Length: 124
Image 1 (cartoon, rainbow, N blue to C red):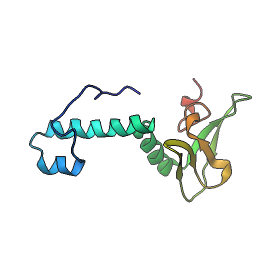
Image 2 (cartoon, one colour; image 1 turned 180 degrees about the horizontal axis):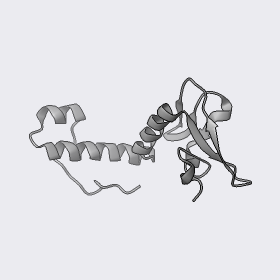
Image 3 (tube, rainbow, N blue to C red; image 1 turned 90 degrees about the vertical axis):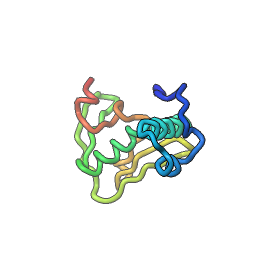
Image 4 (cartoon, rainbow, N blue to C red; image 1 turned 120 degrees about the horizontal axis):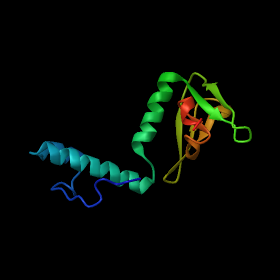
């Protein structure tokens, strides 16, 4: 993960986001400070938050994923059960994304390796 704000210092580094919006005079400082806060969280958790939210958003819309069988390389479409999605954390790491029944539990680390939102992501 490439941290864009690694060496960035803004006037609001030590303030909470709501304080920034309330007291900011420069919109660019608000944007940069918010990005810096997101990247600090990503670095602490070791995950790409945008990827997580994009996965969740897409799963809510399309209700299926593609799964790649590691032994054969075959890619199949898997319809997801109606119901809930759960993003399961173990410590500070995302471990799995649950989509209803246990057959629809996907290891987060397998994203774009053993499961994906589009067939072409697995056929590379």
